Image 1: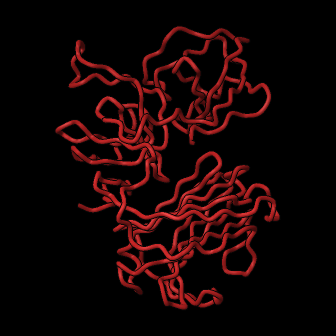
Image 2 (image 1 turned 180 degrees about the horizontal axis):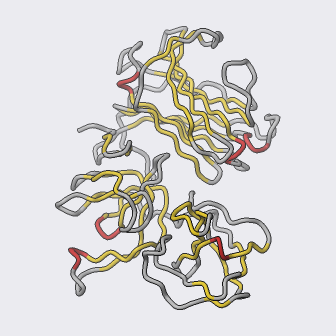
Image 3 (image 1 turned 30 degrees about the vertical axis):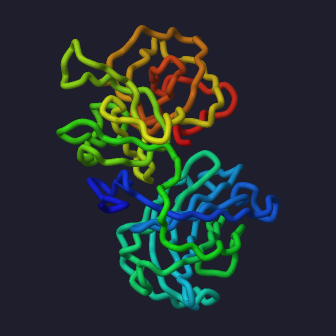
Length: 346
């Protein structure tokens, strides 16, 4: 069974038999010219079909992380694979690429085609991964070393300047141990589990995960109520799991068995405050005006906010705020009191 399955719109999944070896490299805090990209640790995993690196940056600011580069050096080789992820000022991925080049000469790399590059961005960390099928200049079983470099701002990755970089990990053979204990889920529904762009059944479909598939989970949020088989008297669940992928991909928790524990709620764990500006604002089950409304909040009401998502645009604003009660309100009609809420990532 493959360790990574690509389904639907680029969904990266890890089946139950996925295996990996991993190594951690600690990096001294404060050695970066920018606190927003100051790496303190990188964890590299070498699995049968994928190599990934999770980079810890405690004071990470998504809008400042313009470039991340994962360098992979096969044992005995002078060249490295360079897996590059570029982001815009909103933290969105705008370009990914893979090249093969001498370690200390990035000027004339050999570009390699690859559709298997993944990238995620969460609170205090970012992850970059690449399918080993793309690494055509070395043998699949060959041990590797890896390091990570990051850029703050608009500085390109073709120059010699990086805001922070780690040293190489020790040589890491292909995994023989079970994949790490990060939260994951296993699909339990016979017909397959629909992946959606937002935590609501009103959102666009992104693909379907077959029964038995095990996939990494970043965090959970409340959203549309889902009833088993559509039966009004059957099991119900309003929790949704965010897949560990750069795209916005969510699945209903009703049809998922937890693996390696229960995922945390999305967000930073901090509470934010706001004040209702509309005459009457309807909290809804999901971040869309098509979701069921529950009551109303009068103008001037102060609300506590957990995090925000980009969803349906309302009067020119596509942000929605998640409230502690599990409901959602359009940010168009809420004035922030203090700092703006963080995004619903982990």
